Length: 196
Image (cartoon, rainbow, N blue to C red; front, side):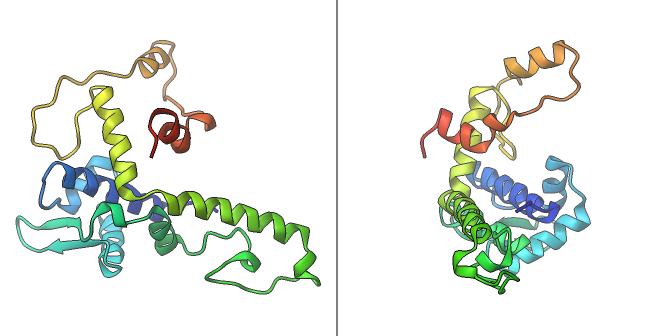
């Protein structure tokens, strides 16, 4: 499974709408969402329309219109969004729950590849269906507050922005872009610093 740009932008936009909800911001314009994440506005508007039709976001028209979450962030599972935007999670069709197709293997029941890919699908689904949008928003806000990063879409006074020490060291050594090691991915960050 590879998350498409469409899926990535949908998740990033929903996380930002989650920030806005936490900041008691009623609506956020598509242009603000696009600017905050440096996304193409027209493509983002198409994604927001899909999310609206699926009932994840609501919108209001007009000069002061925009988008907001249509349901509590706690009820939106990350797996739902990935499936909506990118389709089934299964790496091969014969292990898909929603888009099953018989494979070319003559003995599907005893196929080692199918058994392996079934475990892969189950692991991906278990992780994506375990975490809600609220979990991701909560842990992200916690880390931003810890590192002195201003909270997006907040009208509160924020402390002066402080760069995380690791990033400062990497930039001081001349590295152009800080990279996250595979070990420091979302799960490590979620489970290492914070228990959900």
